[in-house]
Image 1 (tube, rainbow over the protein chains, first blue to last red):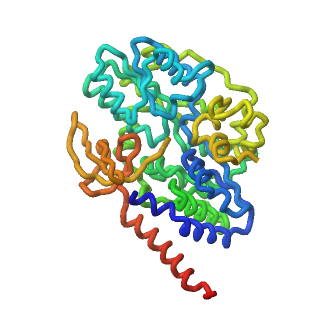
Image 2 (cartoon, each protein chain N blue to C red):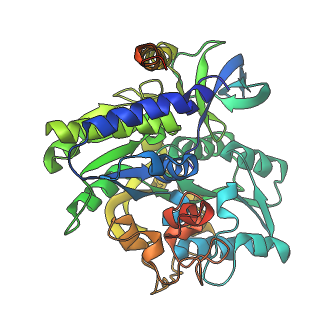
Image 3 (cartoon, one colour):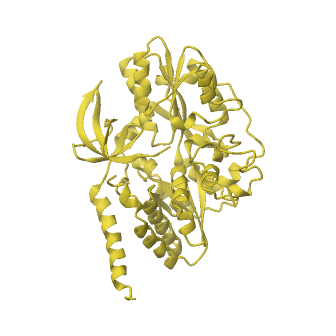
Length: 362
Length: 83
C-alpha cells in the first residue's frame, strides 16, 4: 500500500542501522512510548539488528494494558445487564477482569459487540432506541477525538440511549512521571507518532529541557523506527536534548488543532490510575459535567467498584526498564496472553505479550 | 491501539451534519469521518484511525525522506569494490 510498504524496505532500514552503528560510542537507553512501536520493533526483528550498546525499554503506551482492572470489572458489570448492548474496540474483548472477560459475558448471553469506530456504536444506539448502547471509550490522545465526536454527535442528535465508559490516558504526564522515578534509566524517548499526529509536539520542548532528555517523534514502520532511534542516538552522542520530529509526513509541531479543540470541548483532565504503574496526576480524561448524561459510570452506578491487582506481576519494573519480561518467574508459566496477570501481558502491544509471541523468552 | 493507516480520499460528502468521505486503502474502500480536517480535497492522502482521518499526509515530506535514503543506498552500492 502506498506510503506504507516503502517504509518496510529492508535495505533502507539496514542503511539507517549502519549509520547508528557508526555513530554510537556509549551505551544508551531509549524508551519507545507506544505499544504499537514495541510490537513493530519485535515483529520486524529491529531489536536484534541494533548495536548491543543500545537498550530499548518498552513504555506504557498501550491503552488496553494500562486500563485499570477495576475499569474492566465495571465494563463487565455493565455488559452483563440485559438492557445493554455493550460495544468495544476488538482489543478489549479478551482482556480479563478479576473473574471473567467480555468474551465470556457474551458467551453467557450478554450482548457484547465489536465495533470499528465509535460512530458505529452511536449508529447502533439510533437503530435500537429501546436498548442502552454503551461504548468502551479507551485510548490515548489519538483516540480521544473520535470518542469525543461520538458523544458530541449523540448530544446534537439527542440520542439519549448512548453512553460511554471512559478510560482515557494522556502521554506527556506519563513521560514526566517516568523521568521523575528514582533511579530512572531512560535517557531518550521515541514519542508516539500518532498521538503527535493529533497533539503535535509543542508539549515536548519544556520536558526535553527540564529533564535534559531528547524526545524524537517517531512513526511505526521499521524504517520510521530506525530513523527515530538514529535521531535520538545522534542527539545523545552530541550532548543535545531537544524535541525533534522524525515522522514529518504525519506530524506537525502544532498538530491537528480542530481535533485538540474537540477533546477539550468534551473532556477535562483528571488524575488516573495506570495498571502496572499506579496513579499519575492529571494524566487522564473524563467527560465534562455538561456531558454527564452520556457517562456510563454514572448511568449504571458502577463508579464505586474497586479491585486489587496480582502481587507477583513485575509489569511496573518492566515499564521502568529495570527488568525484562524473561526476568519474571511467572512469564510464560502462569502468566500468558490467555491468562495475563498484569498490564504488559494483556494486549499484543504489551512488552510481555510481544516477547511471548515472538519468542524473546531468554 | 493507535494504529493508523494512510489512504486516498475518493469522495467527500455530508452525513448528519458531519463531513464524511470514502477512502481507498489499496483497493478497499471505507467510509471515514473527515470532520476535523480543516482543508481536505479528493485525492489527498489521509491518515485514518478508528474511522476518523486524523491528518492529511504530507506527500512532499514522505517522498523527500525516501528519495534521500534511496540515493544514499545507491551511492554506497556504486562505491563498493567490484569482486
